[in-house]
Image (cartoon, rainbow, N blue to C red; front, side, top):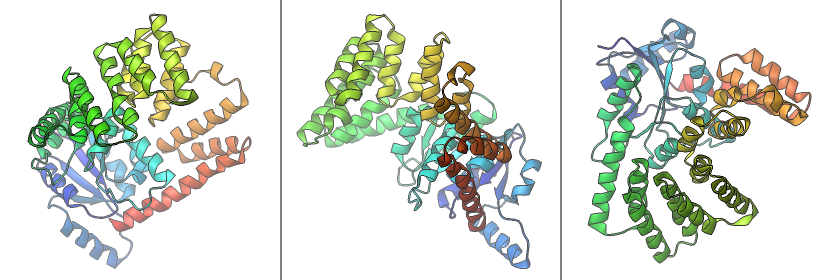
Length: 400
């Protein structure tokens, strides 16, 4: 038995898939489930009702007791994005994000921001939505697609990923699933013939695995999209071929394909920038830009990280880290020479404030937001967001 403990930050409502996962985890780990403090007799009754819904062996834990459990070998399973600040402030714990509640009523900017930032700092992302898993993958977070409706739920891969995280080795379980999903869509294509969706997802998994076959299925998906009358197929399907070619090293072809799909002044300038980089023999930067423009931030960041740490590359990393919610890493790229303009100093305070909030340093975050508000009153919305998030966490606790 491995020595780690697992703390569960609960979802809005009990989830049968989470219960199934916890049943398996209880066999190897001490599992704690966060619940509100017991203040009155009826709270003990609520605790008993909650325990009845959970696997035997799960222990209840109040927020004030978190520090007694969280240590270097603690895993935090975070089942709702509004736990962002509470979970992330447990700096010793490694985070696993579950997004099983696909019918979130409050799809607000706060919800989306918390989702993005929590996913960015998580060692693993799990969802019932394959598209959300692919989005997390392209943003650089290992992701597992867990869906009860699939013939194989891949619970074994989830446990495999947990073991890898506990043992502090790179997570590979998601790559095993890529191979399985590739086989699934190949079977679907063989059964139904070429299809814009099956062929496209087959191309995506070949692409993630770095396989040449991605080109064939990507082209097939585009042709099927055209035949079916999709008006946006040039963007939704054809442009992806530029990412495939870029990943395979065919940069001139990749640039040409992106150029064909470039509409408007902004995309035309991006195309010109890629051509300029290729003319200057800066192939790594051109490849990274092509991948970024296809939303493969994870691969683009990996390329830039291997290049010399000059100002240009540092600024590229800063923007990509910020766009993917990796605020700590974005902050690490900032130097004093970047803060000469008042607007830059204002945005820097907001960034620092959000980082302090994620660290659990609430007073420091508020001070930075107030300093920013002295420049622009709209910065006060960040303080209001902290209060709203407190209310959301209280609702989650009562719901648990």
